[in-house]
Length: 240
Image (cartoon, rainbow, N blue to C red; front, side):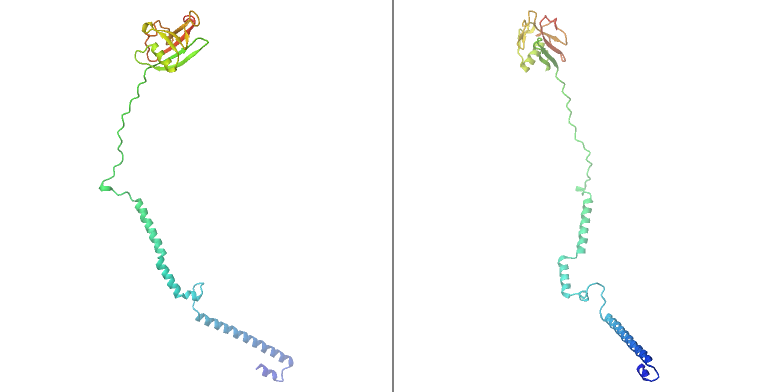
């Protein structure tokens, strides 16, 4: 229509150019608009034909391969259902826990008696009474000094001072020389030191509990706890 209109002689050259430009522009618009509608129709038709996928996997993968389904089924048959297996394991653990928490079954229907029975106490032996004992020490002259430090000696009934002296010197391996017995017993030397070795007034004497007794060593009976001393004097006992 535009071309026919432009062929008429009533329009100038500039008008013809403008009309041709508009016709060209209109043709371009129609062409692009047609392409756009065709693309929309084709896309709509493609949307209708293609199945809708709800996952990111390709359609072929969603359709699934019957071979893969068979393999999956076989694997499930071989391995078992993991969910059921987990449930069974949990049930077994629960049953074990309940079994452990249950009290032990009563045997023969008898109740367990509380263990309150006490064993009979053994008769505690009374501590043995300590055997009677005395102490004895031996001190020589000044140049010799202590021959025997204070030593405890167990005594028997009716032991005399001489018998205690014999026990301790024999045990400690100390030399002892005496003569007589009973009332006539007399100590002549101890530790190889004899009477008169330090003068005419020197010799051995004894004391019991710090006292010099007038009876001989063979007749003086000792008692439990007595303290016996044998001393060497050089002045008939006045120097002690």
